[in-house]
Length: 263
Image (cartoon, rainbow, N blue to C red):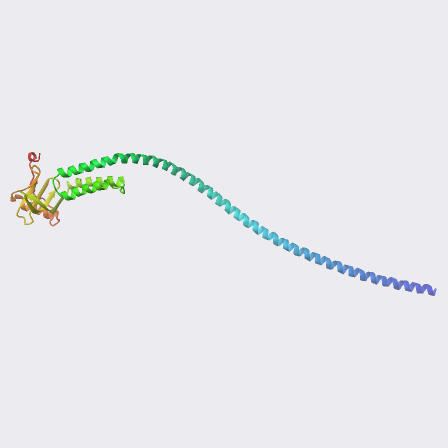
């Protein structure tokens, strides 16, 4: 009986010791497992954070790319509109070029035709000056000579040449409506005299010496200057002063040839 009790006591001690060992082992295993779990969870969290950062970065990049894409689409659409407009302009320019080419051909033809016309006009102008009453003769003949020189110049456009020829005709036309005076040396009875010339349109060309002692007129029939009586002396002097703007414009008398004499 005593031995049986000793064995039972020993068995109980061993069982208690095993329980302690099991508890201690279980606790150690549990502690180790939780630590690993926490570590793994932390790694997962860190990985998730990194993944989220990548996702955020990709999202921002995607939004930026989308915005750029929309901008590019707008630019492309704008370029398409611009290109369509340019195509219309090019078409219009090609039409204009075609029309200009035709106009250039016509201009070339006109230039070939207008140059002989201008030469004939200059010849006619020279003849007109020679047949007209001889006022400002040097100035008018110099103008004709300049026109002839201009016609030989290659650096002057045909349009400018034609404009200058028309201008010369316009000046000659204006002489018929103007009154002017100037100093000149003329031949009177074979003697050279310095006089004041008064031109009244193309109806009269008279003269008077600076001292007023002699007055005369150009005779179309004899094509020479001839003295006249003193009837018109003061009137012609007044006309000269009016032409010089030294007197108020007013009526004055001038000598005229009769209709038969003018023929």
